[in-house]
Image (tube, rainbow, N blue to C red; front, side):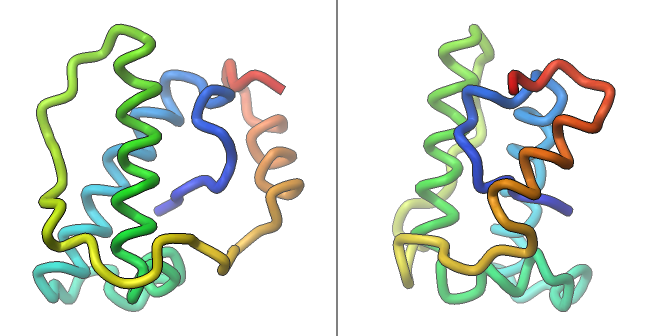
Length: 109
């Protein structure tokens, strides 16, 4: 599981759409109290920050639409509570950029 903390416009198609799926998975785990992956570090860092996760989803959706993708899976805004900014990182922004840069993908760095 991975939600990047970098600008979505640098993400390749694979990572953009993958992050969108991950956001929905984490949203579902937290809002529905699901057990699977509840203790995963990526899930834990979003607990108490559903508003921030909602905001990240909206950033991702904006980029998806800009690239011509159709989006039909909105998050329920009334559940977007808690902090509106993410300030806990599993890897620094620089490390995240290096991770993506070392993958064989088309992320723009």
